[in-house]
Length: 200
Image (cartoon, rainbow, N blue to C red; front, side):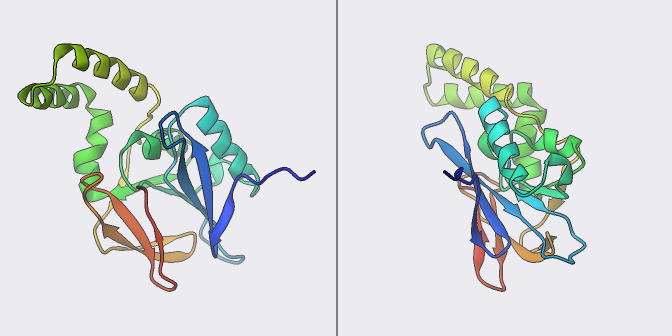
């Protein structure tokens, strides 16, 4: 009996990889972009999931189906800073990939992981102003500490701007800023065929 594949081609050169996460949605989609033969660009990944043993092994196994490992990725594009899309960014960066995100997200979201004390204090002050209890905040603090242990922020993320053209795995995409779910949430539009890659 054939083993089920861990990724599926959803558009030419783009493979969806459902990665398990310990949240109600059960999994997050990451996208592997593979260059055409003869293209000088390397493969790219869009989003990278949370760093849990299950998520890391699932993502590694899906890459292996294509003869790849983290060290083969040229770029990682993060659609937004939420942990299920950003958790493995620092690890993948350490393997040699450039990490990219919207400039707005680096300024407003990335700092959530690189300046956790300040962000926690600001968040608690906001909750207090809206009547959240100490008991609830204590539980929230424990949960956030667990989440932070599963997030490895990029050390040197590169940025792009709304409307900028990005070449990923030899394919041109246009960045589209779609604030709401996160201040700096970005989608990637391949204008040649209308394919749109989004986080949430």
